[in-house]
Figure (cartoon, rainbow, N blue to C red):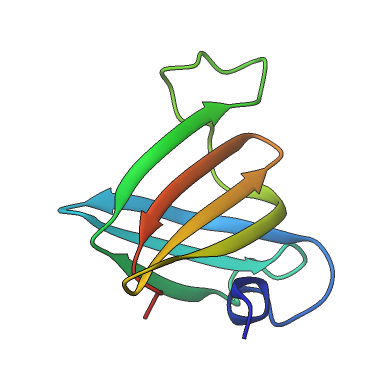
Length: 103
């Protein structure tokens, strides 16, 4: 199963409605743009943040764009030893991190 099928089971525009990194655990919630209350939550453990890039010209690079974020795509690349590299590309921001598969 691909990460997009796991996080985005419905078609259409998707949104990140929550994104929080604490104690090496990333918790993310996504929902269809047309029904933001229909969230799916996943936790990524043993997270190592690789990069973060703000893409919204109206937001300073050190700030976080306001949620929700419009999802352009998400990819997962197996790294070995039960580790994966995840790339979350949104209209407003892009995050890349390494972690275990989400639960």
